[in-house]
Every structure is written in C-alpha cells, then in structure tokens.
Amino acid sequence: DTGVSQDPRHKITKRGQNVTFRCDPISEHNRLYWYRQTLGQGPEFLTYFQNEAQLEKSRLLSDRFSAERPKGSFSTLEIQRTEQGDSAMYLCASSIGTGVLANVLTFGAGSRLTVL
Amino acid sequence: GQSLEQPSEVTAVEGAIVQINCTYQTSGFYGLSWYQQHDGGAPTFLSYNGLDGLEETGRFSSFLSRSDSYGYLLLQELQMKDSASYFCALLGQGGKLIFGQGTELSVKP
Image (cartoon, each protein chain N blue to C red):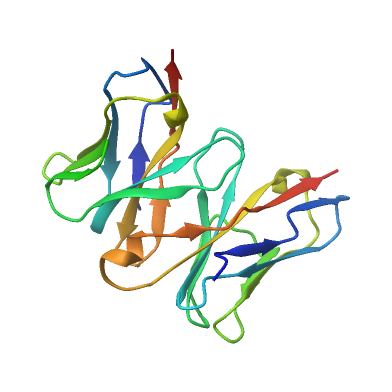
C-alpha cells in the first residue's frame, strides 16, 4: 500500500469555477476525513465518512462544499463557485475507525487550492 | 463543542527538553493525540493518551490529566529535525478528530 493519495496536488482556478479533489485512502481503513488547513493554522475539520456513510459535516461549511465516498473506497470533495477565501490546503486522512487506532490518522500530502 | 489551546511558538536549544502544553474544553472525548507537521509536509501521528498519565515513545512523552483538562507533549534530547509544528487533537464521542491551532517549535544550535 502506498498510503493516502490525493489528486491533484495543486489546483489554480478562477473565482466562480468548480473544483473537485480526489482522495484514495489506505485500503483497509474504513474511516476517511477531509480537513482544510491555512498557513499557521491547525487542520480544520470539514467532514468524515465511515465506509460510504457521511457521518458529520462541519456546520461552518457552506453548501458550496460537498463530499462523497460512493463505494466506501475513494472520496471526492467538490467546491462549487469557488471564492478567494477557499484558497487553502485540503487534506485527506484515513484511519481504522475503531478503538485506539481511531486516533491514528494517516494523512495524504494534500491538494493545494489557489483561487484567483 | 470542543476547543483546544496551545502556545503558538516555543524555542529551545539542541539537546534540551521542551514541553508543549495543551488545554481543552469538551463535553466528552475518548483521548488526546499529538501530531507533528514539518513545513510543507503532512501531519504525522506521534502519541495518544486514552487514560490519565504519561505515555512514553522514545524521546517523546505525552501526558493527560482529564480532571485538569490538560495535556502536554515532552520532547527530550532535542534535535534540529524536531523543528516543526505540533498539534494536540481530541477524538470526540462522535468519532471526529479536532485539532488545536498548533505550536511551532524552533530548535536552535
């Protein structure tokens, strides 16, 4: 297994365009998380999945953000009508969702979004 | 909701010991974790405390006191490569991991 993969690594887009990020977690991990991180800040929780079920979405997240994990494997995060404030690193992480190991998240390298 | 507070910056010299504190507010949680992130890199798991007390992993130790809503990460025999950001994180009863704002550690020669 090669760890958590994210694609694309960098995305530059114009304000108002839609963007989609993909995350491929570690295969035996049933829990998948999306976080957003800006410079000098901690990862900000966006949403997470247990298998294909989306268990929680941050109340701070606008309706322009949507995430799916259709078969409980890879996940996509879509941002519609991007705004300059969406510029950030989008991090995906996965874990075995039970017991102590639920605390051990393996992060991908992230997808950096720049909105012009 | 949940919130965590950490100092924003800590500076120490090579070979020294440094402690990074974390205080939190939560209505319930399973445990406190610590992650390390180097510039340009992804966060990586360091340590977890599910129970009160000290957990030791090599040069790193982590401590939790639920009664004081407090934990810390202790780094011994500091090396230049330990310069990074360190995050405490709570695993809430809903199963999501919430991170603090991070402490940037600078290790000087």
